Length: 51
Image (cartoon, rainbow, N blue to C red; front, side, top):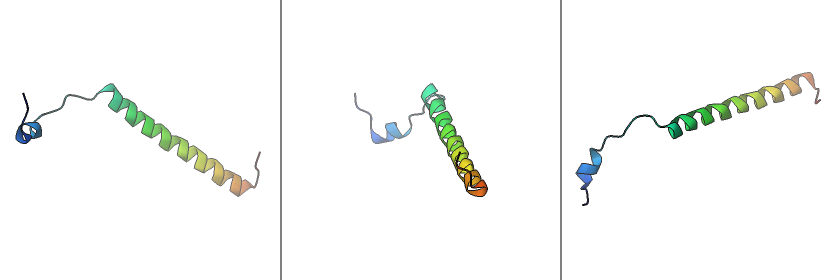
């Protein structure tokens, strides 16, 4: 049985899945890591200490 384009358009999805939650948290973690790296770089440039 094949569905028409109109039937495919009206399919409603389920709820939030674990993979969606994991993707959101992964994205937030990357943003947090980027902020930490940027903050460290600015701090090193400001204090001129590399270690």
